[in-house]
Image (cartoon, rainbow, N blue to C red):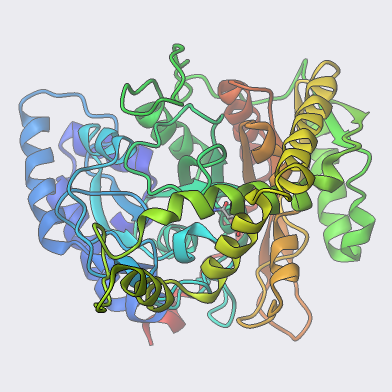
Length: 495
Ligand code: GLN
């Protein structure tokens, strides 16, 4: 029999609804497991044991009262840039280390309404800036498949929690790849919906025109379940889209017949080395075997994605993070005058990567440079979105790598630029606002004799094509089953 902690969200919800197991038992088992391994994995910054127990009791009551909860008793990891009323919400930053959220983010509230139980707040790169979780000022998170390697980022804590069975669903936020990359690094589905599909209310803003909440899960079915619970209009978020959401969890497909899948000419996988080239070539063949017709598409401006993103995202962050000045939120370092108080607070509260982004963003927005940098980047963003529009006139979905390498060792990307390049394949979709996900597609053996590490295939669809995207990912997952062929290093994590 499969242990409670290893069950999928879909299975847990079904069993809790039918009374085969109680939410209280699921949550007790999860908390015991977190207690035994999280000292090593480091997925959580705050474990909400008492809150979770109380929520589980409430879920069991609601089930007894006949409520049909789609996520009954499902253990949830919440990235620590999302507010949960009455709990510490840090963004992985010293500036918010002791800040208590006064309300709950809409996405989190919807998950809890659907019966999920928040186990804890998961570590992340400071203010979601990073690709490895190494920019967190508050803790180290390890990859459950090799503890010497990063879990990816910025939603690395949510990904590690789900990979190590410390939660069944993790909530992440993706601005340029922060759900899809840790998903790929931790053998998970990492799903970023269309921009505006899931409310950003209560998600502490990094780059508001890009930020999007989505799930990290061990199966596509679970990602669909989470998406169905969270997606939809919210009056509290002016960028949330008022358009009906098609439910996805009951509409997943088992083949790809009739679909045209675009393979991007500019993303030549040979450049990624033999190992990855073989994995992606096989993945594309598998898509074909499942009935898809593969066609070549072109994204000529995708190559400008990284440069474009690293102007727009810092520009928006420099404005969003201005609110952390010691007056209202979080840390204050006292001084005799207000200007010195601001300076000392921000100098002490922000880490080096956040400061770098604020500087770059402020520079790009300053008069004299605004047209040369910010406006140019906005134009490039439009061109990238148009490339995708043209491609989607020819195909239904695009398939490409999620990342250019598997999870790397701590400290391996020490200069900012090599870290920025980690998002080469995920940034273009973010700039265009498109829904995209990463699904496990194989295992590679990195140099240095480490354990085999997971590799992710990225699928991307046109705006609002979530149902098609999840359906196709499900067909691929079902036919290949790469994710379940290996287990994380839990035994050594326990030691
Ligand atoms: N790694 C990218 C960055 O550092 C993307 C982060 C994200 O998606 N939040 O900005």
